[in-house]
Image 1 (cartoon, one colour):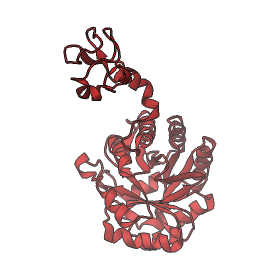
Image 2: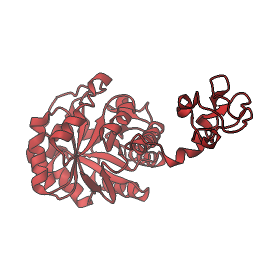
Image 3: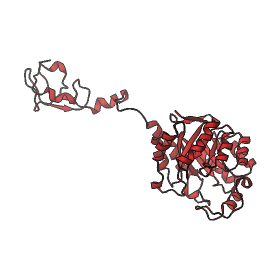
Image 4: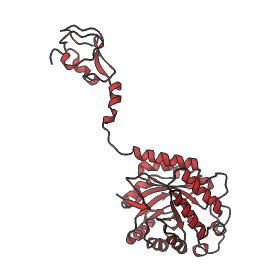
Length: 345
């Protein structure tokens, strides 16, 4: 069974899902907002917070491309939102003081190397870099587990990235993702998790979700998702391109609780549990007399029926086999029948 270690947290099919609060750039470059979100995520019971590490000059050339979920060029946005290494170090310390794992997504070699200096527990690679094989190879060579989002990629373009991770000998998780902001529910396609499992059986599976609710993440748990990632914000009224697809601390608290509950409910077989016996005792029906019966009288539908509780010797399922047989002794009304009460035992 696939499993990775993110710090001391084991992540895999036999462990409760790891919920990641992606703070990303929702701080808009403001360290105070970033620290508030770390604190709020911890208060919500989140185990892991994730940021984005942008070293803009190593990441992109100046450009005027405007993302579909924004109203300014990506270059200007990243220049405004990029946090310096010193702030990232402080955020990592803050997260760890609150008992959480600090992760960040590097978008360049320089960003990955900066995170290596921070000694992060693992690397998160975004969907846009899934087929950036030079960068994937560089990150894999750093020797830490990798969580790879796969939005905008199919199996054919995911496979070379996985080959690089396998060659480096690092554990990895694949997050199914739809890179639409927001993602309509009908385009989430949770069925892709089964396809990823079939193609990459050594991968931990997960979902990076961009809908406007926590429900797809919860629905992914029975399908094998053990990493659940959503954008996080302390305040849904804050500005920012990812705020419309972000969940609040209260919603994340529900996601953590719900995903653990669903995980606990998985598995098992259809059998009667010993722990159900107290309920069986009152809920089952036993065969009882509904009228006085004299010794030698025939048992009929007029003097015999089934009633609760289920503490009698003869359960309701045996009722048809008793009709036409005779009583061995006098039986009062409402007597739970036993086998010794039958003359022909």
